Image (cartoon, rainbow, N blue to C red; front, side, top):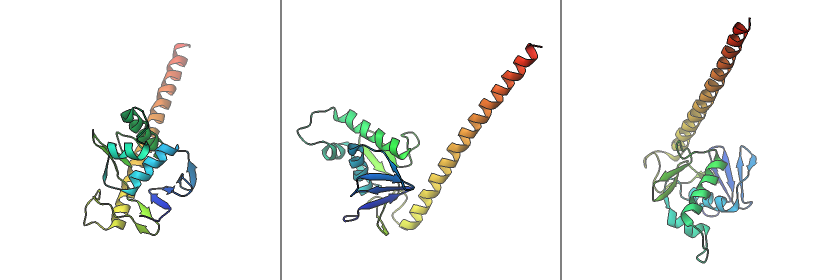
Length: 171
């Protein structure tokens, strides 16, 4: 992956030289520290990155902060930028008390990055792994949209029922 200025995963592009994150060509705002964390995670897809490694990468030795809260906040900002969540993670998996793992296959330039410990299996072709992961993402996003539509429909029906009841009671 060394030498490549762009990393691609899902609908995202991480431009290392311009220090920016793009989603489907649109710039996503992300602060410098979470950007460095995302660079660290995408540099080692499928591999556990320990909290200590994150601490060393994000803060110099003479920095005095609550590192646990700092790491948690940086991870939250990365997840927010990616539209990810800790409970139903598509990109950043929490390994409790140890660190984090980037789940998505990452491409740098024309060739996919080979994870040291692939998420699916060592014998799976990287292109097949990327296709499978993309399908999982699409299914999860479709399910999320379906749930949102159900909630809106239910809310609309409840409002309609309230209006009907009010009209019947006022007659």
